[in-house]
Structures are given as structure tokens and as C-alpha cells.
Image (cartoon, rainbow over all chains, first blue to last red; front, side, top):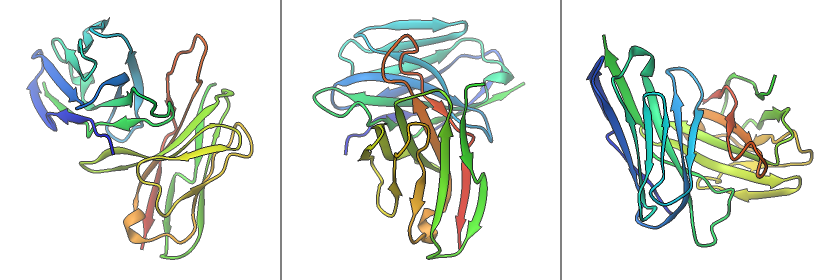
Length: 114
Length: 115
């Protein structure tokens, strides 16, 4: 089946450093979503990107969708301890794939050292 | 309060004993889905439903059944659980159209252990 590769699997940063996680697909995506899961919690929706080259910001978080709609990134500026958790992308593919089919990346586990 | 409710939250069961994990949402969402989460594998979609009486397989449907007889409920059925179905299960729902966009709401999760 179709897969979305997410890297890195782990990221340890000092508080105040930046953090970026990437998702890549070999085929064109219809849209991509990003989620955050705190330790012991459930995934929480952050944002959805739909348009080619789209960039959205939420405070210190910047989300990008590639021009070819095959990759996406989440960048956090000046991390804080509250950013700790696992960040997932979730993709829907173009070209007739059912809207209901949503494939998650493996996730990036972010640890922030104070 | 808008929410997705799963039950049970924690369960230890034995191989072969049928079990059902219930999922209910109070947001009148058309779309509902089940995922399992395993270390290093992220969330993998088991089944999804676009509306009442409409269900379809996700990436890992083997060993699971679902039904969507009512819009608010989407139970996950394990007819004959096996140890490889030990996992953390999440139910999720979202609207398909409208101003809410496609925000997906997840339940709190159900920890299932099959021994």
C-alpha cells in the first residue's frame, strides 16, 4: 500500500533550539494533516495542508506543503518543554483513493531538555 | 462537550474470546475510523466509515470487524483475538464537509492485551 515516510524517528533538543520533522511520499498527495500526541495521550489535530506550496503558521509552528505535493514539514522555532511529544503527519492520496483512507507516518518523538 | 468516547479503556483478555470495543461520538460526524498504534509503526488504519451502513477496509483490517448501524456509534469487533492484536486502539471521527473542515477528533484510546 501507499506509505508516507517520516523522519527523523527521534529528536532530542535543548530548550530554545529549533526542531523540524519531515514527511515524504513517492506519489502526489491530496492533502496532509499534522498531529501532536503527548506522552500517554491521544493524537490531537494541528492543521491540514491542501494547496501546493502552502505555508501555514501557528505561533512557533510552521507547516509547509511541497510544490509537488509529495512532501511536507513541521518546524518548531525555539522549542519549549511543552512541545514534548510525538508529531505525526497523516496523508490522503490523489487519484481516486477514497477520502476515508488516511495513512499516518511513523511519527517523530521529540524530547526537549530544559 | 464534543467528544469521542471509547470503552473499555483498558482490557486484558484471553486468546479466542470475542470482544467489542465501543466508540461513540456526539458531534454528528459522518466519518469514523479505527486505528491501532504500535511502537515504531505509528497509527495504522483498521477500518473506516463514511456514513451509516458504509464501511471500508483500512491498511490492517485482518482479524477485525466493524459495523455502522447508527451515525454516532462505530464498534470494533475482535471475533477471535490473538496476541498480535495486543495494541493501543484509537477511534476517531470527523465531519466530511462544512466549516469545520476535516479536523479529526480522537478518543482517549483503549489499551488491549491478549494473552
